Amino acid sequence: MDEILIATLRSGTPLVYAALAGVIAQRAGIWHLGLEGLMIAGACATIIGIVVTQSVLVALIIAVAVCMLGSVLLWLVVEKLKANQIIAGLGLTGLGLGGTTLAVQSIFGTQAAVSAPFGLPKIGPAFGPFASLSVLALLMPVAVIVVWIMLRRTRFGLRLTASGEHPFAARSAGVNPSMMRLAALLIGGVLCALAGAELAAGSLNIFAQNMTAGRGFMGFAAAIFGAGHPIGASCAALFFAVVGALGIRAQIVFGDRVPHDLLLALPYIATVFGIWLSARLRGGTKALTGFGELRDQ
Figure (cartoon, rainbow, N blue to C red):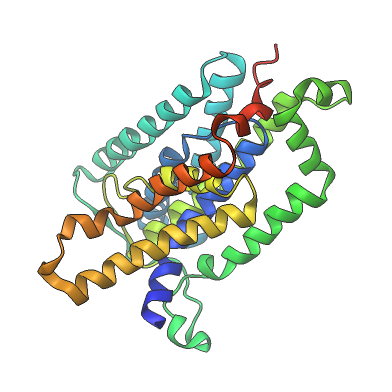
């Protein structure tokens, strides 16, 4: 049981951080399909930062800076150039996937996986069987609570939600919806950097091409499945992680009796099922009408 729980926390922590980034962007009226690109950029920047600077803190700062720069780019394309936010998000994902491959090739002269001499600090033996988890896994519940308080109990959160759902009303109250969306994307960039750092340096201490393997899209799906609520999205992300952990356990138990590819596909099947169930429970596209004023100029 402990093994499944540890595997769930290890694989679910990056999903939770990405889902929180998706929730914040969704509240501001942005359907953030660039989470995948920002995640892999954060993972790449963390490992390269550790290798080059020999400092986890500096590496995390570099990862945050890279992801925030990507967030600003997405905001410029969507808000200033009036591009379709779905296409812009997918473009950011493509930029992240291709840009990290180019970065590794340029710095190390190879497209092979890059290993770091060490990774994120561990929570330590005081936590018993969970000692191998990173500090970001320990801080994950704190991040969920902080985001919930920010969105539901602060003036900033109320303004952010108003900017996403009713930008005309927000503007009449003296709020700049465009700046609120920029703030939402920047906060999401920080969370995506932490997600990538946890994925690459939480336990593996390695960066490989396309290592996110759709986890950013799973985070986006968790934000939708969780109805744009930080706790709901986090629970959805952990549900996807549980399915993945059970799939790994099934490979050990059943061996070749169950197709290996089917077990690997279980998290993605759960993601598709979650999106379908979310649409059924909330009436499909009727639940999205609150964002109809995004193109308010």
